[in-house]
Length: 496
Image (tube, rainbow, N blue to C red; front, side):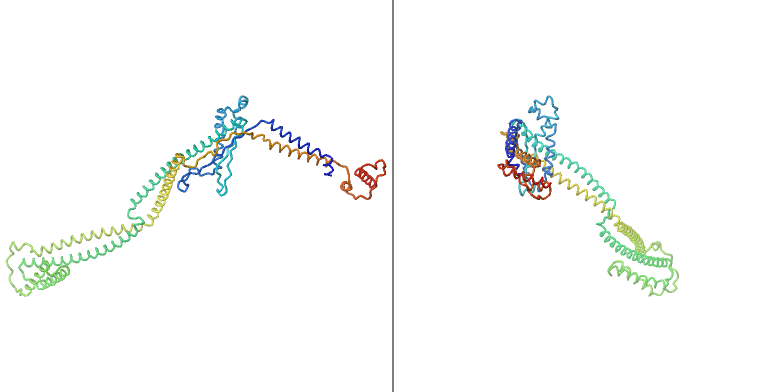
């Protein structure tokens, strides 16, 4: 059936194609022409590597470009362009400025350039295109838009570097203040708990051990001093008794002389442990022992009491005075040793208190130290970031950071970008061809006539029983096709 319809209505196909192609060509002549000025802007990487100086802009170029595009194509930025270039002069009287800005926004197209293979998906730059009715005006608008993008990028980076440096400076001041407070707390804590710091615990234990040793030595020395004092007091009392007896002139008691001899011998033995045999005190005691032995060897008898002692004999002998001085010195030594013992006991109690307080002090010290270390770490990090920000700011001033470079100046469009002859002519021809195919298909669908046995079977969904040929002699000369069609009609009538 398709071939039959095509053979019968073949003229529809070229007619529709030529007609719509002509309409497309006429449209290119009638429609108002628009021209597109284009340019490409490359994003040059910083001269100094990011491994050495961290850039102030670290976000994605697509996000940054979208932000800058929204700012550049905003009303306050496009209105000066409209007024400067006197755009839309025939519409400015009847159209609001917002509508004119919207038209200009639609005329500007900004998109990223495709990245090169192996560049890790980073676009090398972006493309700016401006479509307008006059080619020179389109070029001027493209130049203005491109300049605005470059100025916006430079100003954005400069503002961000300044704000970052200022912010880092403010945060650094706060961190320094916090660090000073933690330092003051730590110093006050060390002054308050002087000697009980965790790092001094071993020293305190060593000092406590030494003090215990000194305490034991002081106790022993005090004991020896007390024994020597008791011994010297005994000798003093014996010498006083002997001297008083000599003053009365009475006979000496042998028992008393023997006791004095034993006491002197004991004193000599003690002194020999402390002094050499040639020491004056040792020699003096030996002389007293010899004198006492001579007195004991003499027979005391029953001599009459001697005369009253002379005034010279009423004075104590030097030996007695020396013994009394020794007893007094022993008192002073015992007092000094007792005082030293009490001082050592106080130091021991102080060391014991420090050792017992070490765990509590250590816990507080750890908390203060942890806070101080945290504050110091934050301060050092902010100090480093401020230094990096200052260096990045200097790079921005020297134009050695990431900058926009115009690859080619905005082009002057010599041919209109709309309407394009190839697109409209090709679209018209293709549309005419498609329309002709649609018309032929519609004709084929609307044709209900049956021209063959196959058409009968498809239409009635029944098999053909017989075929009756036509007997009209007037139609003998008719075409086979027409006769065959009438035969099929007769066959259908017979079957019905």
